[in-house]
Image (tube, rainbow, N blue to C red; front, side):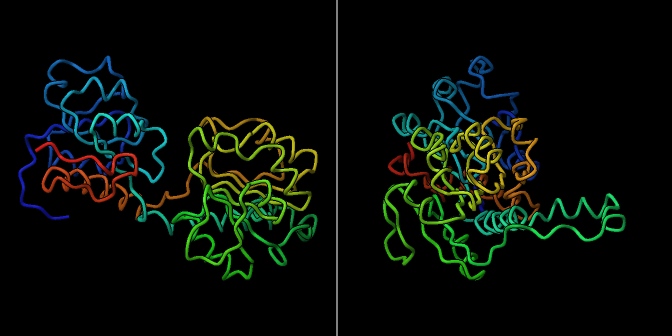
Amino acid sequence: MTDTHDFSQITILVPGKLSDHAGKRIDKTFDMVLLESADPAKITPDLAAKARGIAAFDGIGAAFMDALPKLEIVASFGVGYDSVDAAHAGKRGVMVTNTPDVLTEEVADTALGLLINTVRELPRAENYLREGRWQKEGPYRLTPATLRGRKAGIFGMGRIGMAIARRLEAFGLPVAYHNRRQVEGIAYEYHKTLVSLAGAVDTLISVAPGGASTLKAVNAEVLSALGPKGVFVNIGRGSTVDEDALAVSLRNGTILAAGLDVFADEPKVPKALLDLPNASLLPHVGSASVHTRNAMADLVVDNLESWFSKGEPLTAVPETAHVKAKN
């Protein structure tokens, strides 16, 4: 966004890593202060007296916020913000923003790519070619799975879930979904429980956010309901999956295959999953294109500029939608 306001006297803290694009814009526009991490012990009296905003990719906890009495806004990089204590921010009158919409299509594209990789074994087939096995051993094996005849279920029918659903429909797959509550105005089949959804489909795609309410929601019971032809794809948050149960289910044939872009303890990936040939694994690249990450970075900074010029953010999270600017 373009603005004529002078923000040079407004101090914005950037703890930990942030995109270079966002950092350059913040440094050019605001008084940017870099910190190694969001550790309250790193807040000096000077920073406590002047810091009014935070721009962050990693988590921001209550203690770090409370060390900053002048804090007005936390601009979080990413659509998921479960690592930010937004409930505490809301109680303290601190605005929290995220970066929805601008990454929706990219993540949905990745979800379908990961699904196809998982079902048709494309990474394994490419490795087969690169290793010279096609010439030595003949054609790659016929894949036991296909998208043809499948029925897809989406766990988390938000913006990204809807974008995935549209793509699945274009591939000829019927779609059902599970949310905490039914979404008005859509015709997709709704299931009140995740187990019910898993039992009704053979392809389950998780786009669910993290947090206590979804912790290990995809568990042994859900995977058993998905069945031996089942394919599970996770493009949402690693914390939503019981990874031990998933590894066992893949190993013993409870489900056919899984495609994962996210993990519970990133960047650590359980060896039990790494060792499985029927798991297609990506290093959390759902939105990782230059185009989309720059758009996300711009929205982080645009939220800061909008807040400090107009007293209104562009994309407030629900927990802080009630927060008003102090001036």
